[in-house]
Length: 363
Ligand code: NAD
Ligand code: IPM
Ligand code: MN
Image 1 (cartoon, helix red, strand yellow):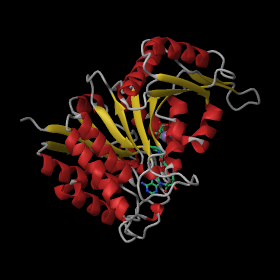
Image 2 (image 1 turned 60 degrees about the vertical axis):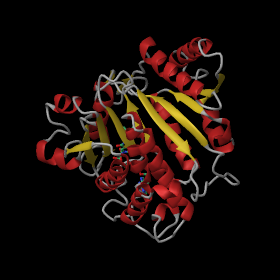
Image 3 (image 1 turned 60 degrees about the horizontal axis):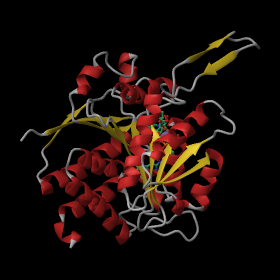
């Protein structure tokens, strides 16, 4: 059988530490479940590449990557060398847009052994998924600046919502909700203050909802929704949001589970015309980069999402089970410092890879 061809792009900072960790666990799952994976490694989308070439990506990046079955990505951003808006717009955001990865799927689950900062919350209380619109909305290049360097400077950046763009993310979120046990969807909005685009989103949400009568619908303005993530995380099942609101909620949700370091994301092109991209929610963490202490779980969980996407649900579940097993054991020498341990990226990775390899753990 033809192997799945994976483009591996570590990026910057801890991306270079957690991506090899993720591959180690992927290899353990691939060996146990006979999944043929073939990696090709790329050094672009990084500050090093920028220093050498003055751009974030080679001219032919689109042709180079488009034939892969998936992209396994770390994190980009090294603001001491290249401004964030240049490095991110010049790499990750191009991938999402040009490969039409219009769904950003960001599961958020309170894991065993990692205490929630919310008093009294235990695993089971927080288990939802943010479905973030990933190609338009507030992330637009339409706008500009006039009267440069004068007191009259004016800056405008437009929000773009297309009917196709809004409907396709809403449909995906409703379909996902209808397959889940609780069948509940919550829409993030702000139609009291942002009075053109957000009422449009609400209108499309209501229209889409009519096609999914089995799904319970709820909506909140983003401000109180943020408060409710903290006060009532158990209310949420599928949360659908515009690009910016989804970005914010997908750091807030994982923070409620103790650390953003465990949170994965899948940038999906559901039509299958282009590769989907799997990356943790966190960034390059310059403050801890190079120390070997980054928590690899977000990146490892991305590997599980990638295997599921490629049609290997068993291998995917084995990785998720291994993460739970290792966290339940709560060995302080194994866990990384962000979750209260004294271990390293490699101790935690090895423990998870060993647990993946050990089928008896699933009995
Ligand atoms: P960040 O996620 O990199 O770090 C925020 C905090 O969380 C830091 O204290 C960091 O040490 C900690 N942290 C993050 N991941 C961790 C992990 N795996 N283990 C332990 N601790 C972890 O966010 P930031 O500081 O806002 O951004 C740093 C750089 O990363 C910037 O250049 C930013 O633009 C970029 N960034 C990239 C992505 C991406 O590539 N998808 C996402 C977010 C931020
Ligand atoms: C994320 C990140 C990116 C985003 C940044 C780095 C451009 O925060 O993937 O959540 O805003 O989408
Ligand atoms: Mn983010």
